[in-house]
Length: 333
Image (cartoon, rainbow, N blue to C red; front, side, top):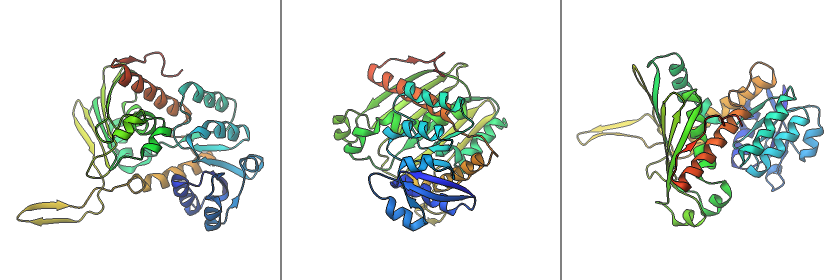
């Protein structure tokens, strides 16, 4: 069994801790969180409360899961690679694509791997959609529509330190677009607005955005983002090709339907990302175990994280300027 250290005992750290502990190939050995919470989590899973220095110095630790604050991701990832550990880091690697490129350099000089926490690639429905595209079920992909609407907006205090809607929320959709389009993205046009919460606007961010991506061959992707749907957690993808369409729909709380003379009524959409992607998070941890055992290379690595950051930065620039941002020749900067 591979020993794992977890850095960050917050909301997403708790999810990863549970999945690591439940995986028969992994042992959760150390937990680090300078802001508290490590003691309770360590007691629950029989791990040791540690410092990052103890994690890096422990030769028994094979992998480090980084679920701490965004501004720590880059340094913790770099130090973990230098210490000879495989890394599973939550998105984003950093708030700046140029700085995040340092991880590519570190990995290039190492035999360790970095798995980026783009959990949606591991969602069974989205993974099936991607496989069907690759198999040519609808012919050549032409256009893509990605919808990601949260059930309710986060507090403005969170928005102020999140990096903004494009780096905090849309970044998952940028990764999905890159993965599904499977082609270099040539240009980005984004329009942002404050339609939901004036406090988000006062924090300098948008709460609503539409983004248009165009690839070098002319494929088009439209991304729709909203901090408040009003009807639950809306996560849909539609892919249109030369021979048809593939669609991944929302997940419901149950499959129960009520049929009356007034019509048919289904259950509600799942209302939180931790519920909607619970299965994806568990599969993601299993994939990390495969990476540590040398059975796989990361489905999403540092280069994917940098590509998504470049798109997020371009979307921010476009939304602020009102202009199309050209990217060709800069996707691997």
